[in-house]
Image 1 (tube, helix red, strand yellow):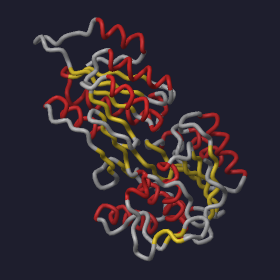
Image 2 (cartoon, rainbow, N blue to C red; image 1 turned 120 degrees about the vertical axis):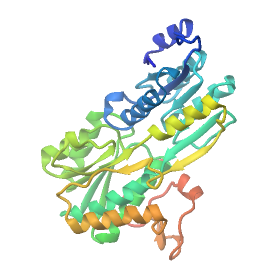
Image 3 (cartoon, one colour; image 1 turned 90 degrees about the vertical axis):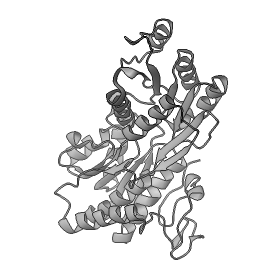
Image 4 (cartoon, rainbow, N blue to C red; image 1 turned 90 degrees about the horizontal axis):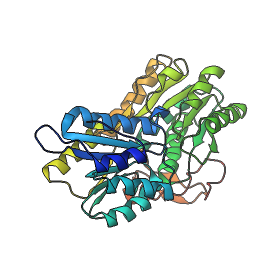
Length: 357
């Protein structure tokens, strides 16, 4: 169950892959990460999922990962290298890998591909993601209660629907418990750049934010929040070690069960192209332990939201909701459908500033 993480090593493995003692070669499972496995965020949690495969299957599998692969032409080369080196199943774990994954998949019809956060499928390409916006509803609720300046800072990566959904859901939840709340948003146009993320956190604090939320991958904002004595939330992983006083809770991505199930499906011949979008109820999106700095009544109301999402009585986007321009979006009691959420390209009413193209 060894892993390799460079293109050269992958190529060498293709020439001389070790066989198991019974003469059967292990199934090869590959991963492409947009950041380093040590980002303690997005790529870190995907790599925990890779390790879950190794733990579940032992020597029946051999896993490979390539880290810090930029979205674009470099991704296509990396994905093709894994396919050429005999991998049976390849997970490509960032939105910008979507088209490169489809292109390589067409060239290797016998290889199974799984693309995270995308929306384009093929006979040998599945897509999967988490309903992270559900987690941001919970964290937004807490943030709305905990801010004293009524200003919540939000570090955003790219203006894709996944990120826009998160901003909107967090804002609606915060606004519901604190009508005076406002969001300040800084777009950094990167998934992982600790320096940019730290600069964004400092800029938001200068604008009066005393709670920081993020849709980027490093713990830099958490570190700044700890230094400045304000609050923040872990993103993708818990991040408590970077801000033991600052961290209120976290969104934790739990990829392991999905990765194990999809690996097993390839092993037993039942793999099919599917579209999976799971959230808090199935356990793909988890909410980290609440800090004791959160008042007991707020912890209770946050838990009630979690419970409501699980039993279906609460949906993050339930009307009446207007768009930023004041036009009607959802009527009283109406819930947003998945198609609209998957293509969300607008702010809801009350969020200031323009959404970048």
